[in-house]
Image (tube, rainbow, N blue to C red):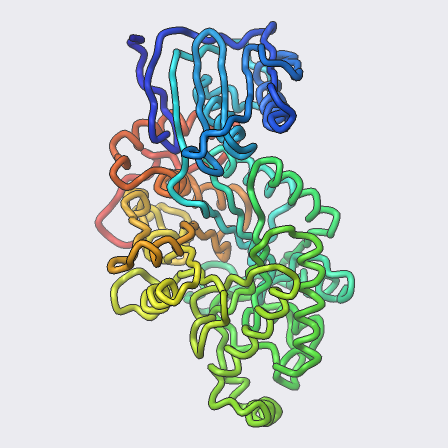
Length: 530
Ligand code: ACM
């Protein structure tokens, strides 16, 4: 048996055994794919290993090579599992291309952390013998990113996706529209981006600060359809599906600023400059419904994801209540209240998506007033018993709806990570790393069939207080590493002490690839709130 120290992997594989042997990646190394399906992950790994090593790493169809990829038929590995064996050479086997990819990402982590560098590093690239058999706990391992509150350039989004993929996330929930900015080019409605993608200035400091101050600087940006296709292709290569979110009927002020006929008030609006929940909301005229369908048609053309996220959160009903036109519409449709109006709106959008072979997913409020058939819920409001979000989540799975757990109690990474007063400004709350790690995405009292509707878990990055990708990364990591592990590893195998130890190596990987993670010892916890 080898006496080597256990490798520092994140997420930890479910089964790992040291074996004899040492592998050395060298200028003579080759990468082989034994069958055509294994070509793509083999080629991608070569492109990931070349920059730091400077080796050629030719990729050939072959059953022999320094690193051999091969599909096999072990059904017990499921759609994302893999086997990795390291001796004097390496084999990666899996029933699926995704599994082969995850095997390759584990292999990258087995190498010295400098392998993540984008420039050539001179050093030995050895791995101690090891055998790994691995598969994930959940099929939805998601990270969300809000690019509406602050626009993040395409190049930075690509790097973020690459980091997520290296941690075996498989879902990127892209929050593309909100009151403060519309970020997706829609050909039929050009003003969504010529007007809606730009705000005159932005609030400085916290939304609760008084008096309010603004920076006087125009902020904005958007992704062209060509950008979006590029990002989708990049993510797909890394086995990440992108779930686009077009938030409706609330969180639409940027769209209403561009097309005032979508709104409920007579006054012109501008793209919002502050944070917080906004009362401006879409009206429910047929022409507005048509607008939503037109936008979603272009969204579906860009994003192959089965799931399309339509938001549905925090839709304030005040303007609907006050609008005679909307009250008339409500009566005409025989609906009792505004909850029912929202519910009918979501149902119609769900039917439209279904007729296009897509599935609607929305924040847990979409269940208020009755949940659209087959809709999937993203549960965000707390996780305590008796909480409205919890009640919705539990009832939904009991009624056969799928559920993604994205709760703000443990998985909102816009919260403070420590109580140190020097932490950079955040929205509030306090979710330390340990709290995220210890989170159990379970709902008590479900039978097996009901529990199977829990698709998985997701972390949220709302960017009101994250003006750039550096701040996004600071808030995301290491908490997203804890999430990656709890999404992957069965409950009884989780271990926070070894996670912290393994994170020391992950920090070196982040440093090599230029991720601005929060260093574990950078700020000590204090007992007072920020
Ligand atoms: C949300 O945080 N409004 C989903």
